[in-house]
Length: 189
Image (cartoon, rainbow, N blue to C red):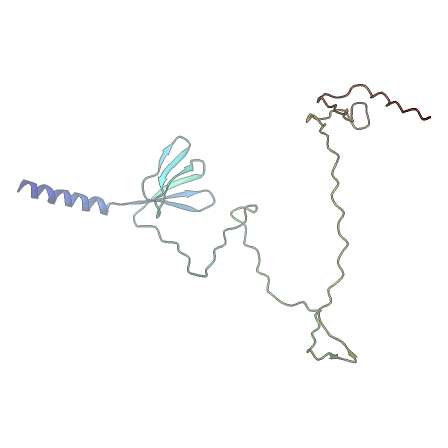
């Protein structure tokens, strides 16, 4: 009898704990929310929590979190329908930038079309699109000469002064300090 009463009390406690699940929302900079399945805990410079709905254990910088809000009901499921797209935004413009304007797909106004029979006006020939002339290509950007010597060290002397050109490296790996003597020419007879 005591065993049955203990099981009934344990079942009631387990049911009451199961109903007490609460969710939390971390409001971060930029106005977005991250949902947590348990109470976020601040450990030093980060908040630790289990993300809702997948339960992945995450950390988030405390400087990014504006406040933590307790929710009484589960957060809404944000599921995209098949074929539906979501604009995430550009990494350069920031969170408040408007999405780029939609450009309609309209053919150019200076386009002449031919019916395919070749007679257009008073001459024999095909019509079609005549593109405008292209601007000349830009010259390649100027790349200054490398200021790194053959040994990997920077050349500190200004260009044109002594020491601005690196000395040649000999077969032993050291710079050649004096010029090579002229090679003797064989005598011709």
